[in-house]
Length: 429
Image 1: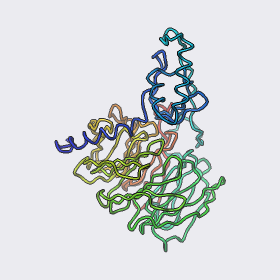
Image 2: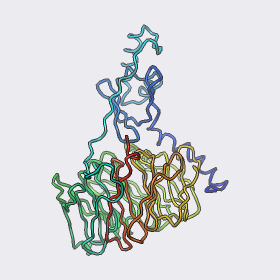
Image 3: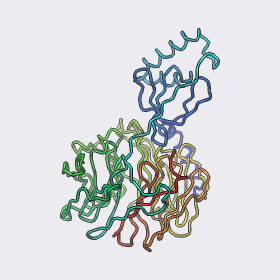
Image 4: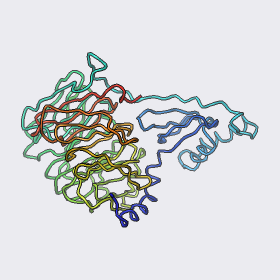
């Protein structure tokens, strides 16, 4: 079992605090009770609620079409109280005080998917490797998709590269950064306008990303005293959470580099991942042994809980923060963050080195020795298997934002990046 009795008790207490964090995502229902959607509130404006689904699509619903429970929830939020209260009054007037399902029409839900770039293939049924990129130096150390999925950032030991995936063109490359540090982590801001890379000496370099892909140096901050293992950026692209190799967390301003919060307590030299809520108010950080909840508005740690006793080689939160995956030797463990319970484990054939959820959270890609196993998270059953021509451990992989591809550094010393295309049946609807 993953949790012993003390772990279960600690996590059970912790879950009570976590519930509001993950539950910006909730089940929204129309007035007929027939239309339901799991989504997170983005905003309310001009009489409509904008709800982001777990697959990234945004549903737009007229407030009058929402259930009484949903309208009361919106009215409880200070920033949306006036619009929700006005909608409640309009519903009462339109239904003569009898807002029963028979008196109202079903919700007219308009669903939009964020605009994604396309990586073209000759045959839409193609499965497997569709792009290959070779390192021009000592190998790649990390990768990150741009938010629209059209570009891939790849860091080397002393260089950073920006690749256009459709054309396979190298848009930008910066070399000679060894004097500053060796790169160890990389990510884009959610608006796609900035690229952040951390290194062994605790620095974080930030570039402005031009429309044509040029990288313009913007900032060089000394955020940590040790290697930067992970960087996550808030949804408004204004702040970042980073974790170093000694287990220290920093919350800081991207514009100024000013540290706004510091926290120590994670296990040294292990992978770590962070989930930040859609509004950027709270965050979860976990390394496979410990999970901590932070209030970013108050700039403080609220609570921490023990997850396991082992040291993981790979960890990942699902995009909606409801599940957490980490490896235990040959096995991938899945935790339901809302309840603290363990889902059935995913048992693999070799040590797991990398893991990532699909954008809708329904698939999990796991990298091991020369193979990428894709699992169905809900059924805990294998969905697909990619094998590579290389024999090394796959230490870095990531789903594309549209959920169609998985990029991975595949060779033993990081000389190659492969872009794998999933079978069409696994593409997000």
